[in-house]
Image 1 (spheres, rainbow, N blue to C red):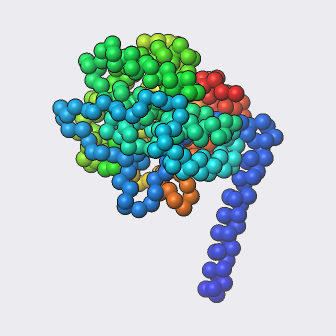
Image 2 (image 1 turned 90 degrees about the vertical axis):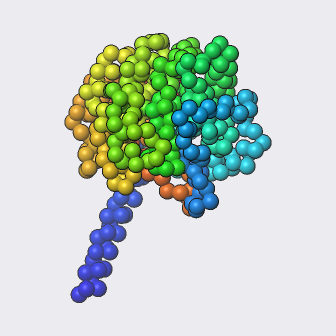
Image 3 (image 1 turned 135 degrees about the horizontal axis):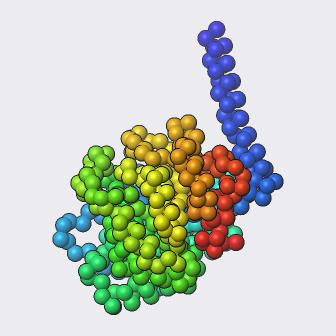
Length: 400
Ligand SMILES: [Zn+2]
């Protein structure tokens, strides 16, 4: 009887798994029929983090320890030419190409035609040590131009902003920064990113970085972005006014005990140049409790150049014990307040899954977000899903 029951359970589980597996081609077929196998994911990272203790890296690259108070940040020493990979990077490119091929397989399962690849936001201490540069991502984009496009600057521009105090910015720094940004556009970047305004460390090997959104170099970047009609992709915790760091983040030794306000300076960036399109990434992945639908509603109403990219991450109690303002409830259903907001601004939302994709069997497991984020669209009427999943991103990033 016991064996019979066990067999019965296995049968039921097998049927459940089969039904899940069988569903995937059905989704793809549906996309094909409706022309919706053309979705665009505006925010994906390739990341080769090998299993094992020898690689002291965080989720967004090798981390050299926090900057001490008053310590000068070294200027970036990365060679200036962004036209192509350096010889030392060539050996890494095969890894990234393999990760890209893996990503294409995942995209095909969900009807995603194109993904914007970009280096995560890096700090000066990581320059020259992190393999995930704009150049490496560009190499993958060039191999698969139909499936990928480049967003660049997280590994070049972000350290420059992060490593320069606003009061230190002078004409020669600005000239160098602009030249760097222009080179990225020339190399084919469809946007600047991933840029960090406030990036908190989720664990000891992850980095903390902060630069006010109205930093003079961010304002310059807005002008350059406007001139080329390309957007800036921003990672920023919502902080309305200085607040105590939430306990689960305060436990990470290099996060500060108080988080600085981000929203007032962010609004000054939005006002600085209305032709500069700003995409606030990771909406729904809130670590402060301030990223409410009400805040988004006010900002979207007052700032016509603001766009918001949605993200749903798998629930990981150990990494993130709470998930305020998540887009979905525990059952995956979109919360009514978010559904209403998306409907109020159908031309301003897009998808940015923020999945870190590596090589199966080689890369360390990272939190998953691709499937859960893309599942959002299945809950929206088809015309709205098409705008969020394709049209808005195609327009904002000038994609075919
Ligand atoms: Zn990010």
